[in-house]
Structure formats: C-alpha cells, structure tokens
Amino acid sequence: MIAAAKKIRFILNLRQSGIIDTTLLSAMENVPREMFVPEAFRDRAYEDTALPIGYGQTISRPRIVAQMIEALDVHDRVKILEVGTGSGYQTAVLSHLCRRVYTIERHRDLLRSAEQQFTTLDRRNITTRAGDGWRGWPEQAPFSHIIVSAAAPDIPPVLVDQLDTGGVMVLPVGDERQEQRILRVVRTEDGFEEQDRGPVRFLPLVEGMPAAATRQAESG
Ligand code: SAH
Image (cartoon, rainbow, N blue to C red; front, side, top):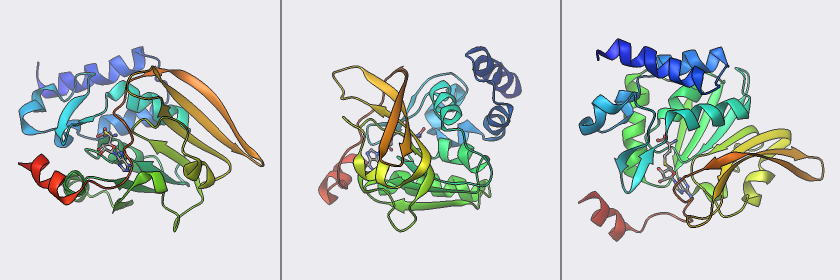
C-alpha cells in the first residue's frame, strides 16, 4: 500500500475506534509518525501498534495517544506538561493543539533525537528538558494540563501539586505485573477526583536519571 493510502487508513481506524475530535485527528494526520520511529520500522509507522525506539522504550500505540489526548481536553491557549517525551511523536501532536508543550525525558539520547525532529518539522512551541519527570517542572508550574507516558504505581503527588485547580492530568497507573488503568485526574480545591478510562499497558515511570555507565551500555 502506498504511503498516502496507509495514512488515510490510519486516520479512519482512529475514527472507528471512537476518536471524534476533528482537531486532534487533523493534528495526527499532520504529524509524520514515520519520522519518529527507527528506520527499520518506517514501513510500519501507520500500523496501530507500539514500536521499539531504543533504550528498551517504545513509541506509544497511536490509538492510546489519541485516547489520552482526547481525555486531556486541551485547547490552543494552554501550556501543558508532558512526562516521557520518548520518540517525541505525541509531543509533536500536542504542539498542534496547545500554546506550548513542556516535555521531560530521562534518556538524553532519546530527547536529542526527538529535538532534531521538532527542528526539522519547525515545531517552535516545544520546550524540552532532560530530567526526572517524577519531579515535574516546578519552575513552570502550575499547568492546566499534564499528560504522562509511562506508568507510575500510584498517582504522583508532586504532579498533582503542579496542576491548577480544575486542571486535568491523564496518566497510566499500575505496576508491570498488575493491570494498569488510564486515569483522568481533576485537581480540586482540597485534593483531586479521579476517573478510570480503562485498561492499558505502559512501560514504567522510572525514578531518577540513568547512570552514566548504564547509558554507555544501553547505547552500545
Ligand atoms: N509518548 C512517547 C512514549 C515513550 S515511552 C512516545 O510515543 O514516543 C515512555 C517514555 O517515558 C520513555 O522514553 C522513558 O524513558 C520515559 N520515562 C520513564 N520514566 C521517566 C521519568 N521519570 N522522567 C522522564 N521520562 C521518563
């Protein structure tokens, strides 16, 4: 199948899976997912599947990216925090939907490669940081929206603290052995309310930065 036909089918599949937000669908049509996957997987970029991106990480499944962004309910006047840049695909989609995306990734090399794609695509409203997403981005807090791309065993309290009152966070919660759920968390005056958006499978939100030695071994 030629590239354009694959992309049309990709968007149709998202619609069929229940994604109805047309602004989101057109953002996903605009961002070339093949630029965010390793060369060896380019021909599979428009399949609805996660693919390896190195360092034991994966680019998330498009349907999950769409469901999480739809649940986040963003608009073009907000700044949002994304934890777990990974390939940068979701970051690029988000950059079409809001004023600015602040994105954190603990693997410097993954972040570097994502940054290169943002430059190539001329996405200018993305600010990146190599760091531990468990700590959020205190200098830029509060955020009206936070999206997390790796699973924490529980809702990280620091991230809830960095939400505005009424702000929304969408994240997978649960450990690798037990079932994980997508949660939609809304910050209230005196705490938060959570809503379960169904089962999911994500890699863990790891605490701290990779050790230098691990980095060398992983990149070899
Ligand atoms: N949305 C991304 C998902 C990448 S996988 C994509 O589609 O490409 C999850 C990413 O979260 C990985 O790159 C992993 O390195 C990163 N991650 C895990 N724990 C983290 C932490 N504590 N801080 C920042 N990034 C983290």
